[in-house]
Length: 199
Image 1: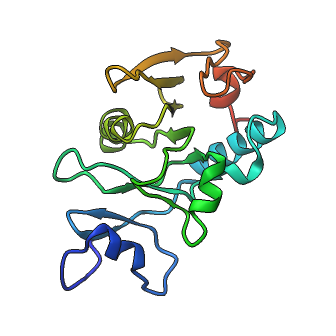
Image 2 (image 1 turned 45 degrees about the vertical axis):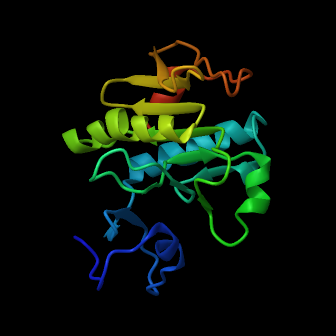
């Protein structure tokens, strides 16, 4: 459902928008579109990844942001949002001073080190994570993008090719150790990520 508003907003106007709610919005063609709440499963996976990165000391805790960091992205087709809320974002240190007022990485800031999306059920969600977000994150220059797909039992790691500007993907299943260029000391298997929360 589209939030009622009198006219289309620019991204700068969107950043100043206040409506006295805790709603998160995507800005699509100047319209505010409320995001649904996260599913408990996706939220749990993002929180567990936060702790796995933090415990392994791969990044300081203040740089690891599950569900709260917004990224302004290029609009590549008419219905693309101008912003995304990845399930997990790992910032770079300069972001801490650049984002004092709002946890938004705008186009004039460096990209984050890593974004992670956990695939939700449904064709639209799958297309968003595998096609639309992939294209926007690549165009934004994000060096590494993970897709955690529990339905297909795979973790896809996409690394940005600096020459082509496109992602090169590698799929990890079961006991495959995740090969992260952004975090080469990572010692996680696909199974460890995919089995989070399972008894």
